[in-house]
Amino acid sequence: MLSGMEAGMFDRPETVLLAGASGGLARAIGGELVKRYPQVSLLTLSRGEAEPFPGHRGDQRHLSVQLGDAASIGEVEKFLSDSASLPDWVINCCGLLHDRERGPEKSLDQCADDWLLQSMRVNLLTHLHLAQALGKLLQRRQPLLWASLSAKVGSIGDNHLGGWYSYRISKAALNMLIRNLAIEWGRRLESCCVVAIHPGTTDTDLSQPFQENIPVDKLYSPQLSAERIVDVLRGLKSEDSGQLLFWDGTPLPW
Image (cartoon, rainbow, N blue to C red; front, side, top):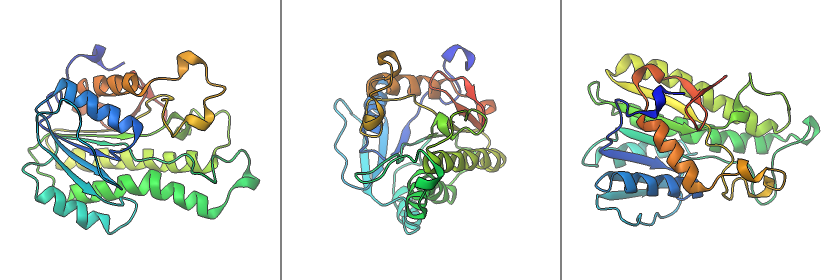
């Protein structure tokens, strides 16, 4: 576990960028941030509009954008350029496990190109495009903490069950992106930490169809998951960069 969860070098964010901001866990994370840092400036991204967070006394600017599209890179770059300050925290919550027609594959025969490509678009490209937009604006001396919500099932070393092909493949690709970003931005910036975090199975729309066989004590409320994630982020240091972390801050195998 990371240093007993004590405050790290990124524990006082002034501006936070929250992507996928309309999702259940993202809303909970935003609410937790506002609870701990009422004056924080929030930059939010989602496909639709974003509601204000109750109790927030800082500024909030929102951009409706399709991060899975390459055109979003320029849109987000302009949005960030027009902001009063660049984010010192970035939390990307974009992800896809199922839609109304399709879900995780149980066998190879169920795999279809279009679903795999859609999974890559949402689980990988939304993070890649945001990184490309922000990367154009990075300032060497400004501290940066980046966290992408990933999944334990994206760990190749931890995969003992198989199945869920598209989700596992796309999350494994996201994990490799995070590893690469940690290396590149670690060279460019004086103070930087880039991680992927597995939040645990959280009671949101993403996990709802798969909750039947989950023990009650292993299904977490959005509020609890948000508290844990923010705790982990507050304890991070530059030397923690490049890791896939469990919700308690312990490293998971790639």
